[in-house]
Length: 436
Image (cartoon, rainbow, N blue to C red; front, top):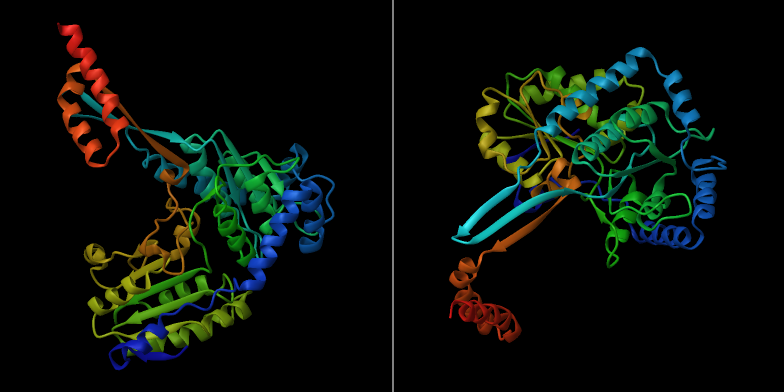
């Protein structure tokens, strides 16, 4: 990893340094995703079975996970694995239960009552990728808030293994988190099935979850169809930015960088530090720790997209981070908590040396489905509110309408909307006649 000094870079160089690896959603992938969507819309389950055989090398006769599949999955897991899943579900549940929104009921003026009520999204689709590694943690992060929100239907899709089974940990995590409608289908075809439905899979109202370039392209396309399904947020390869000072533990920092680098070759990790010595120590630690990783080739490829940057001070580092808007931001410097008010753009923040990013990925309680590729500037990480929708209610008394009516009719006439004004006037005349 190259060491760069921020103050020695011009504006163009700074811009280039903070660029993510190019997203692989080129026209070929976008067109391929569109073709898959058309195939699923036309041929339904037959298309899903054919595409699953082609892309996942799994020959299926049915798509839905059965009770026998769940039983076999539970037998395949150790007691320790199930306990870890339960700890994660408990902590994620506790944090998301606290996110419930109270109803708002306000009298904006005498006789004019306005309310804001929360309702769950009726049917949600949860996508849990497999890729180079199964992600039971993603099943927990999606299923728990859907359950707490009260979504009446939760349909989960995850790619099958070549033997035709779904990953046991994903199945048990989803089941224990409150989902039992699970289908063995992945990729763009799963997104199309959730969006438009097939013989086996009923369509949903909103799709959640990360995925590869085909999944990302498919989510974007189905959400762009008028009257179609909604999606949670833009998604891209995983990333982390660490800010550290001279007192930081180089081994800790290196382990945090590698924990994200091992996600995929297109992941990106960035270290900003006020200490050139720390950067040198971290480079040495990266070399040492990398050799011990089972996924060292993937992590090494990701490090090619990564940066070590020398900053004049912590304030400069925070400014750079706010510009980059990382998915994960780790603060390993003195009095880190005191700088939280200055941090505006980040998906999730990890404060202090004893808070590795891994805890947020699994079971601290926060959600690990987060905006990437700079989307933290305008998107939040997944929370209970994304599984809900709000509707407003208003109710006026006769006195309230008499008070508010003149303002309504005046504004309506300013806009040239006579029928709007008339809907008020006819009621005011009725009230006047009643009083006579």
